[in-house]
Image 1 (tube, rainbow, N blue to C red):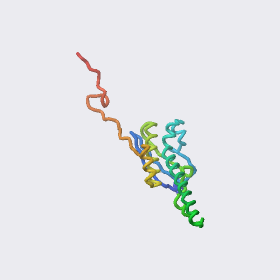
Image 2: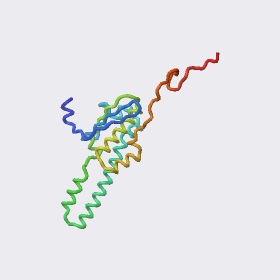
Image 3: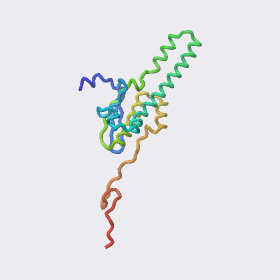
Image 4: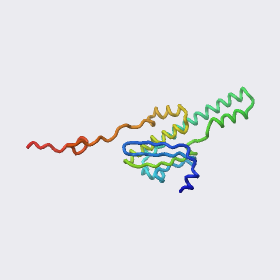
Length: 177
């Protein structure tokens, strides 16, 4: 097991929480796998398409952002080629600014515990969004993730039980006599 962790180059770690669920995400270089508790995401989430789309949504924003950045870089390099007939410098500059990490080159290893399946799904989505934001570091991706609501932690928690009641608000049945 220690050999396997040494081979993985961890790019970023992040934590997400929702209700009682806590998700820890490690993003490493790989082949595009999404493992939750050492199982494929579709198996762990029981092929629930809403949950699978929810946890992959931050990666889609990253991919859209990098595609638009590569298009912008291509346009800039074309303008530079028109101005300067030196094509080697423009190719080198475009390679250094775009780090080449798209979701097909990344693996996400998630360790999640506590809560139910939907709480775990939302905790994973928050952790993945935080990891994507930390990995890329540009304010554009952070703004897009924030606008979609992926970086907002849901503050609702279970209300505490009060004395004299059965649950937080459930009272015993009233007896008139």
